[in-house]
Image (cartoon, rainbow, N blue to C red):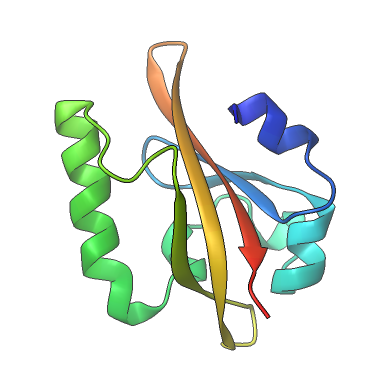
Length: 115
């Protein structure tokens, strides 16, 4: 999957973030599943959809990748928890990719709820 493919995704929630971890795009399916509108969530930190108990691990992995450029979790299906706007946590399969765009890292993920 590429970032452009994540943007074109319609069946599965997808989110795009910049190299600072700020959300730059969500699709309509993301809005339906997570309860956030694009206007409400674009510009917010990715941590808004990550359970608080995983924030430290997220920051560590994100920072490590930005420093080394070497992925450890990218490009593979990951079973992780996510958080909706109303605070409900759910299990989901995340598939995360990173690309250099105009000399900066950008990230995209599809987040398929597991029910």
